[in-house]
Image (cartoon, rainbow, N blue to C red; front, side, top):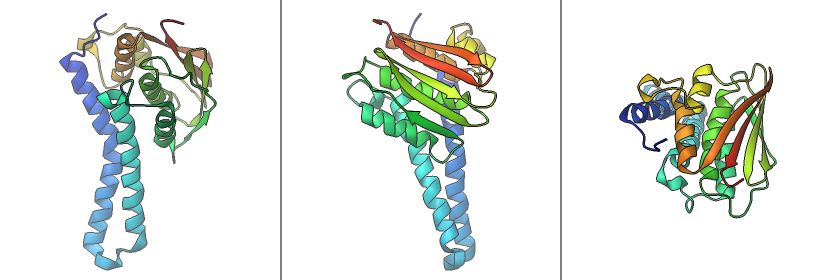
Length: 209
């Protein structure tokens, strides 16, 4: 399979990124509007809203930059940064991260980038909240996602398995497709398995394993 991204896939991926940034950026704008309306009397509440939302936007941008940008290349991302980035994405939300991975040094090329994309899949797989336990498995990693009704959408699973053509991609399937393509680029298999109704495992398996 080619590792090129078709224009349709690029459009959907950019739309997904923008969608995930709308909430914190919008909250910043709301805080600024509150200050404009109330002046100095807006108080600490507006300033706290702006500060918290700006931090959330920065954490999301950091993950997107490493997961989908050149900054996440083999020399641009180390295990400590990857851990901080993953934990930052989930901070303050309904999903808790339990990091138990002892990453190989150096990790296989592309593994950390794929870890960040897998973290987005794990977040999507836990709509009601839960826990993501990240463990090492040989030269690879697994994300063990536990929570009520845990599971990936059928569209995501199909895209991850290479069963959706680029022309048929949607906002619901683009993340699985991106994971598949970046996996091919770095020779890392991404396997999602359902262990029961409340548990799903997302494994990253380098080709040499």
